[in-house]
Amino acid sequence: MSNNNVNILITGATGYLGGSILERLLNHPDFARFKITAIVRSAKKAEKLKKLGIDVAVGSHSDADLVTDLAAKADVVFTAADADDLGAAQALLAGLKQRFEKTGKKSVLIHTSGAATLIDLNANGTTPHQVYDDTDATQIETLPGSSYHRHVDLPLVNADIEGFVKTYIILPSLVYGIATGTLVDLGIRNPHTLLFPHLIRLCQKRGQGGVPGKGLNKWPHVHINDMADLYIRLFDAVIANAPGLGHGREGYYFAENGHTLSYDLCKAVAVALAARGVGTEEPTVFTEEEHKTVSHVHSSMRNLFLNSGIGIGRHLQEFLLAILSSSVECKASRARALGWEPRYGDEEFFGSFDAEVGAALRG
Image 1 (cartoon, rainbow, N blue to C red):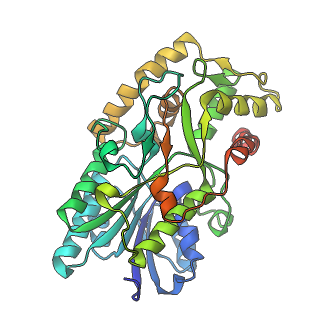
Image 2: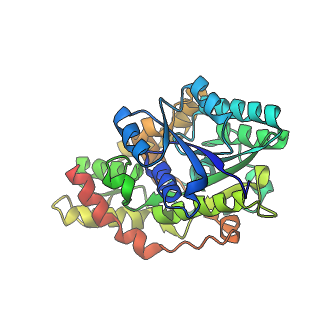
């Protein structure tokens, strides 16, 4: 693949994560040999993308026939639309299998999952019990099939084992930072992460920043620019046929550059809200009624995803509460072994909330 033109398909190209991938591809030194196709819903955005040299299929990643047809022509597929849409994943795999059976060529699937698959359901505002490392495939395989995202991730790994595709699964943690670039300037891409604006609006509604229990549960974080670096570093390794590149069961890539206590995260939000006249700088514990809601979120959300294929994006507030009351701790060892060197750490993470709060309250 390293000496040929590369046909690339991307889903979620106008979203926060997918837009970061497309932005980097547009500025890639080898862009001239890329034939990029994006699936987008908006005809208006489609026209703007065409002017940037992107082929566009107007439709949805949930349109199985469309997705299968496009995947059958792709050397590389990036998914960044909905980590929990099993139907979309199956449609992609069907197309990639068709391509393999017709040409004998294995396509590459770089799939966006999420660190929520590692959630410690017993955290409830306390410290996590286990640290996951993305180089430990056996440890990852101990995750139950009922964990978030596993109903999609496992079929992808099995497809790699079957031998008709190479799969690479990227697991973003708490992604933060307001995106910039050409796609944002043109109104094509969503510049904001999903979860934090909902946390901010939830706290605004209650008139005070909130925190689950003592807030001792942990979550990893990663800046949107570092996320984009990881996607492209992995992509470059793939098209260069880099030796020893882990895929399939050895193809999980965590994305983190530090961990935060839930209390510290919630405190940063409370401080930024207080500066704008909403509550005080000290977050208050979510009420008993709010905790009752949180205690039922994990099972109800997990069952919703497994039974209907409806993704997190349509139930953000419920998922937000699940995040705030849970713990994840992980090490991005495999990602760093690629040469990935994230530049944004704790200081940038906590410093980002003032701008996020300002944007959320304006919007």
